Length: 160
Image: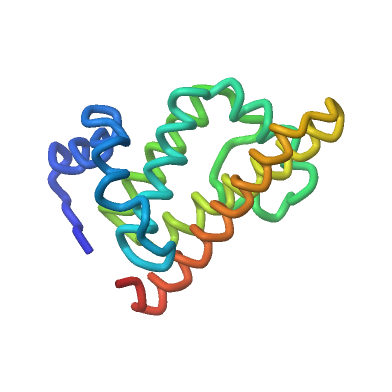
């Protein structure tokens, strides 16, 4: 796994999807299983990019879901209640941590965020009787589970 203490290199890696877009990364990594390094990074970059582009929506969904899975709030690292700035900062920190610190922890933190947001999305879908939002909740929950599994694989030294 790539690790760097050079802040310039880390910032280039963190802004990779924003600068080059997810299209290039999708071509390389989107088909990779979640418990491989490319698959885990793909899911992490997608979650990060979505949270940066739709911060208000992420905050709304996170707040709705944090009551359901309160234990995950601590792992996510988001201050309560989060605002858009907090979501952007925390997601940047999680992505940065994948390259400067503990990859397993970064993936599990991202998994916690995705799972909380999935629960919030499901609550909002129930309130609105919105089938599309229900499908979004299912995809977010799947992403959260995949990131969590990848984090466990990384911690066990099994992430390929």
